[in-house]
Length: 289
Ligand code: ADE
Picture (cartoon, rainbow, N blue to C red):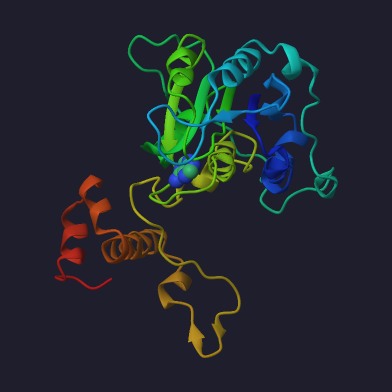
């Protein structure tokens, strides 16, 4: 069971977590989600959550005196966090099987958690989405799919007072992550992205582990093309090799397509991939796919 807590000034923005795959995971009891309005921890007549930056400059910075108690309550499951009802699955998913549920194949978690030197593995993970963070990748998603409690702190892009993450290290393993080199208004959409990437890897969510062993990035390569019926459509034919019934040949073709796609679109990814003789022949144009 994975518990996700999200603290945000836009709770309704997280509603998609109740739908599709994540809603189904909630219904199955694999996932529990709490979404918390940061303003519950605001004090003062105006319930302010931010103020102007020391040293001047544009934008606003979020207040440590609001974020501190909010993250304390999330870590300890106290205060408004204990009182909040967990998110329910969207009605559309109640007791309706999904097309990608697969029975009868062993469910297996991914190995390895994200615990750094000097960190207490029993502490929950705190993800702080920010364009100034380390780029989030599939390796993070895999490691975090083994967690039991992940909290997300959604700040606006100008940021949260830096002392909040410094102090949170006493109660969390803190990770500042970016979902890409562009700037969003706040961390909410990044949380949706990260939560979806993580939750689909939890055993029992996508049905089985094999459904994501061929994903793009799982072997360091982008995935090549896929085809289904009909065999010929609008004058376009499915590649002949896929009807050969020869698994070794089909696997070789799929690897070739993945290699060529990666070389075309993301050549820098090839540097991290172990290439054998056949792979190199293809990529150097000495062999056709
Ligand atoms: N908040 C604003 N921009 C972001 C980004 N690119 N990634 C994560 N969080 C963000």
